[in-house]
Image (cartoon, rainbow, N blue to C red; front, side, top):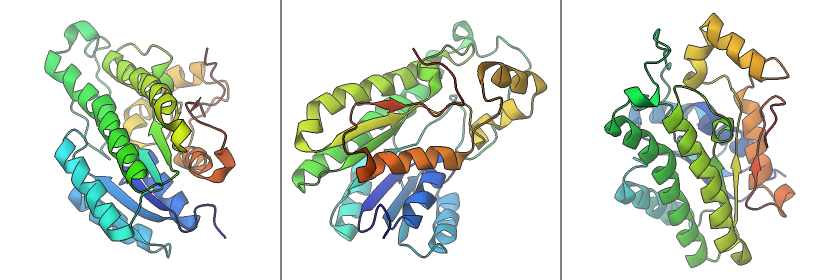
Length: 267
């Protein structure tokens, strides 16, 4: 029997990267999974591919920056499955012009993305997706779990960038630091109801979001210097962490951020 047998999981950003890896892991452990993403074409393809694993998987279109869009996905999920037990907020962008699943190219100008060269619109875009979007997902998840008396698990994808400065990614770092704080504070508000809220703060993982870094000798050298294990992580390692937090194995965990990051110190 799988660790998530008879559970229903909703994963935003579920079409690629860490969200998709988590979806696959959850399906393998018996969960019915809703993958929600803004990219409809890739979403339908992901639904078809993940269905081959033998579990129940449904794609739903979502814009995490839009409260109405998020509310509709939760409504449809509950209408179809009667409940939501696990929610993973994995939708995110590394920069204002990032598109889900696409390679994030590095600029040749090392200062091009420094804060003093960014517009307010670029700042808002990253915070809207990475922080406000996660807040909306968490808010709707809690409301659903309370209404249906579900003792559920909410898992937010943060980043080591929420704890360490990355020049050129100030907006991203601030957004992920906010996710860590959001996780701690929401947990304090709802854990007495049997709803656990935790986060994962990955290091540098082999996803489309880090492809630009991995294609640059300078970028790889930077990551190796920061990472004691001297390698990038793989999505399955983060998905295994998500499975731990989704399952009863982590029944005494709430308000925590776990950092699978190849040995980087987190103070």
